[in-house]
Image (cartoon, rainbow, N blue to C red; front, side, top):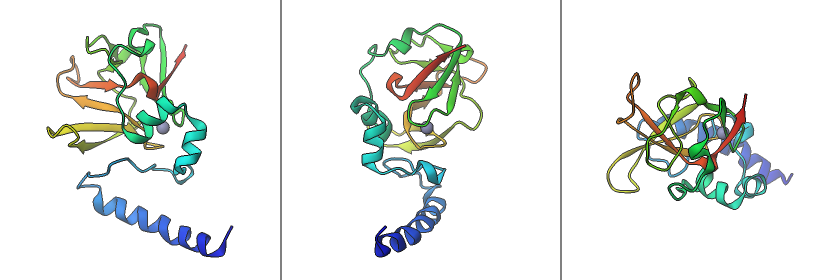
Length: 164
Ligand SMILES: [Zn+2]
């Protein structure tokens, strides 16, 4: 690697970690940083790993069309993994039909997702993303069923279902 470049990267990574700690309470990131350095991939690396549709959701915080994902109707027992890094995010027994047209869950696997505020639609919403690769998954609302009262409204393109 070019010496200048490697030195810059060497400085940049710890700086980004410091910034992340400082800025975290502000929660203003456009896209989320990966918590693990090996998942801090470049745009091109992500583009080569993902389909263009999944790239748009996971890395550009896009939203798929309602009722467009076949995972919306997925009722088998299994685990929903992050389509970016394969981290297990949701269990099928926490999935329910919210009627919104997006796969919905009332709870996530502990520690698998992190949240931040999002003002894209002016009204503040709580965005959530994979805690490992930072890939955008969806938004979480407080109108879900008990016991949590949460509704994790997830893009099907951001998930990979593994039946058990
Ligand atoms: Zn991930």
